[in-house]
Amino acid sequence: MQIDYRPIITSNEIEQTVDLHGLIWGASDRDAIPAHVLHAINHAGGLLLGAFDGLQPVGFALAFPAVLDGELLLWSHATGVLPAYQGRGIGRQLKWLQRDWALKQGYKCIGWTYDPLQAKNAHFNIAVLGCVCNRYLDNFYGEVDDDLNRGLPTDRFEVRWWLSSERVQRCAAGVSPALDVDSVTPVLAQTASGEPGQITWPAGETMVAVEIPERLDQAGQRLPYALAWRLATRQVFHKLFAMGYVVEGFVKSQSQPVRCYYVLRLAA
Image 1 (tube, rainbow, N blue to C red):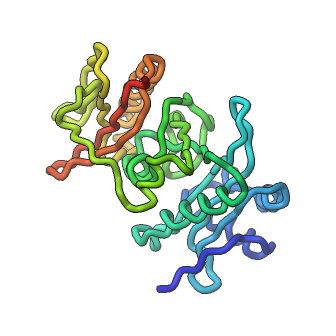
Image 2 (cartoon, helix red, strand yellow):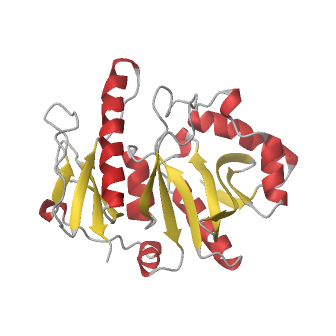
């Protein structure tokens, strides 16, 4: 399978991207990105990058210029790949190509948000790409009617991808930071039944860990479980970020069942 990567520019490809967004996220028509917005972003200096299997778009990454806290950066609003094409490195390639483009345009940083309870995304953003985070946003998008967000507050991590940092350069070379989570103090861990356990606040430790479920099932009777994790981690991350901790790692254990941990370091 040969996947080609190129900017999405034509009206037909933009319309296909609108459909693609709905298929990837299971979004309603109300929550799909409108074609006219994509045209405007392209015109105003943004980048709509597509992954194509022949003439068919199978993934995309959307970014546009932004100013946050007085700093110019590229804001990456959405990156996704059709389910049938996931697990083949397409999303990873889209992000590294986005980085290449941003560096050529003079950007030092790309920012975006993601759901901190999605372990797959956490591993990708923190461990694979080398993002860092010290900002937590409550119910950032409000109510969103798609398969990932339906019924839950849309809390998000706001990450920074410092494009030329030593950390990101190591990740670009395929070298993820080695972390021994067993030696790190857990602030929050799951109980034997999979619920969030008791919170143990740090007493000045340089590094701490926060566990999240490997898979957050939000459907039907599992919604109360997902909401319990949302509220517990919201409290924990707000407090840790206020204390000066920064998310610098994400670790998945090799044991069964799989355990997933954020690793945070106290900023100097």
